[in-house]
Amino acid sequence: MISSKELLLSIKEMRESQREERRESQKEFQKEMKEARKETDKKFQETAEQMKETDRKLDRIGKMVGGMSNNLGDVAEEFFYNTISSNPTLAGVKYNFTDKNITRKYSDIEDEFDIVLVNGKDVAVIETKYKAHDSDLDRLLNKKQKNFKLLYPEYKKYHHHFGLATFHINDDLKNRALENGVIVLQRKGNIIETTVPK
Image (cartoon, rainbow, N blue to C red; front, side, top):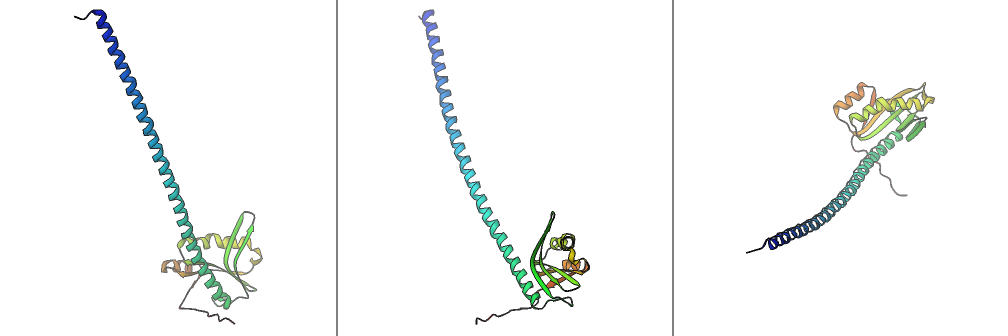
């Protein structure tokens, strides 16, 4: 038979053993949690690196697309400038001077005008686009006309003509432009100039 002293000692040892098991279990749990946090941090770091790489790729794609768009715009601008400057007549009006990409700033207003034609009494401002959109016409009507008149007061007494030169314009937009007094210039046929080396 077990004495009460031995029983108390046995209970005490059992409690101590249980406490030790709990401490070991807690240590093991904390160790597992620490490793899980490390693994989670590693995954977050990998994800962050992947997101940075994706951002870099998207930036490169954005620059490429923007570059292509700018290149197409440059092609349209050069085509229309060369064509108009070789025969500076627009809607039956003959011009003496042709300028391209002129920029002027006054106070907080600054604007660029793609092609500007001038004679003694008329001034024509042409906005060039590879493909014309509604927003291009709206910008010409609501911003470019107003800004030109503010930035170039020396042409105040001239007849102002505004045009939209484009390789492509849909019929609805073309009609809307014409209804608003905007001259529409489009490429027609294959106009090619051959330059022969001397």
